[in-house]
Image (cartoon, rainbow, N blue to C red; front, side, top):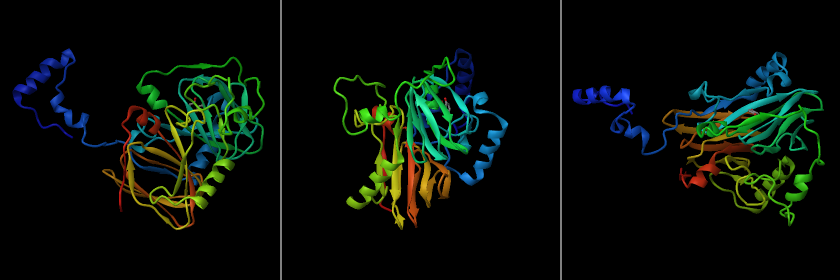
Length: 351
Ligand code: GTQ
């Protein structure tokens, strides 16, 4: 809200105290403590067919080795220059080409990879390799060394979701490069999943990654099966369709402390009811097509999406989904932080 022109005596007070780095609360109180969230973020859609050519051009412009991470950042149109898709979350599309290496490093930011296109690339976390397939959700825990490589054919693209703006907000970011570009592989692929991925856990193993899930990869095959089973056995939710959250199997909580991830199935002919949530969410379309209708103080948006498209629904924007032929949507948000702070709110509207 724009403050009214101050009273002359007050204006003099403000001017006189400004050099002492003082400013009156009463001029900004409304904006500081708003009656409800007024996110500066805007709903936005990135159609894959429109942005893929830029990714491929990036592949010609720079190598993965030179770029360290060859990524095109999905910037919220209302927050250009801030490298973020919501105030707390970062999103980017990373390209790796056959034979390339994105060299080993680690940072206090947590990362998720959601695989969009291609096969044969892998990410290594702490000496364990994970091959990536479209639809897989893969975790890079905070402060774990990771590098990416590609031994297959054709370009490989995935969505990077990181808590970069959150860590920046806390001024708590650290990073360092590994000694070698590609880590030595010390564990067989699938070792983490074998130990922790079957609703069981080894008896005397300490938690390898603290409050981050010990499973690096949540393969799409299993996620899709879970959604299919849900669709057969459970009643549909009128707002979400069939929606599951990914869990850290050791806690039942979020796979990462700063980001919660979800996968949802909207069945054939779905016409969802509207809802709003305080966690702005980033979506990656896996299968099928549909429409997201979003309304807020920014206006009305109707996003027609198909596979590999990405879109963002900011905090406290009313959204609903439709799908004629059915679809599957991956999403992530900062809900885990908001729940830890006890501030998460959701409103499910009747129509
Ligand atoms: O793969 O480690 O999109 O450090 C941004 C920062 C990816 C990564 C990003 C990163 C990475």
